Image (cartoon, rainbow, N blue to C red; front, side, top):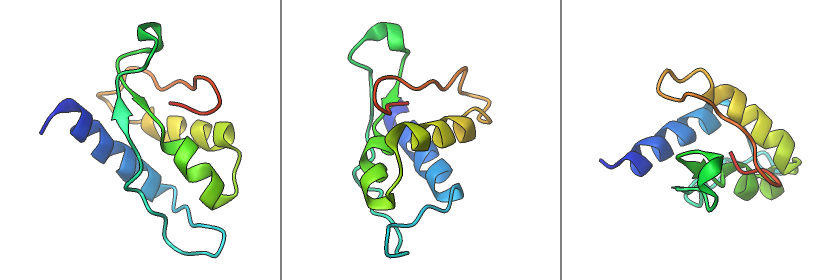
Amino acid sequence: MNIFADFNARIVKAVEALDLKDKEGAALDLSRIAVEPPRDASHGDLATNAAMVLAKPTGQNPRALAEKLAEALRGDADIASAEIAGPGFV
């Protein structure tokens, strides 16, 4: 497993722990969550679009959702920091 797949699995697990549902109360499609190097290297080693792709189906603000996700990720011993960039990237 590569680092991107490993952290994608961790992010999916964190999203699942948030118990988010779509507007109709159904489970979310988590397959669109991506983990990749950020476009700006000063933003860290890894970035995820999770909050951006889940905001619309859940009816939540992307930055607010990103903050919930970042808080959940801060508990991971392998993550030095989880910060929000732009409209909701973590």
